[in-house]
Image (cartoon, rainbow, N blue to C red):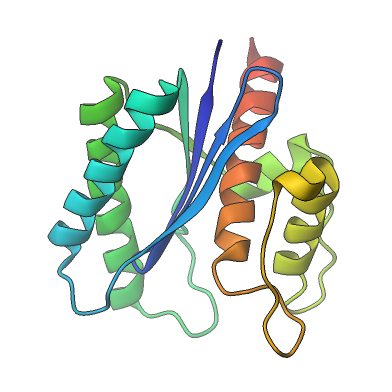
Length: 176
């Protein structure tokens, strides 16, 4: 059985997904970090959780969403540097745990490989990704709604991790 791990890494939370050999959703979770924790401690927690993933699922492929390299509204050089630094720490932890380098996946290429189209409207991408994953996995992808009817924070990170895993598989198959 060939399992695939998908990761959506940010410095405050990480979406984690494990997809089975028949594209079934085996695991979907979010790792949340306390804001006062240094990045090194967050990376150590991440590595510990990845060891549990390794022992339970033994993923053959490890795909990580490529970190953003362009500024977005509200981002600063400091924020971008922190994200790049933490992504590198997590990628190194993956190498230690899974005995392979994680493959970086461009999120746009992953979406394209899965046929996900994101209109140029503001703040709609998260909802489209969550809807895609919900349509793909039905009741296997559970999440709560806030009192305003929006998906609970972190749901988008879990959905992104699934898209990274599925997109990574599709891209790998295209190039094979």
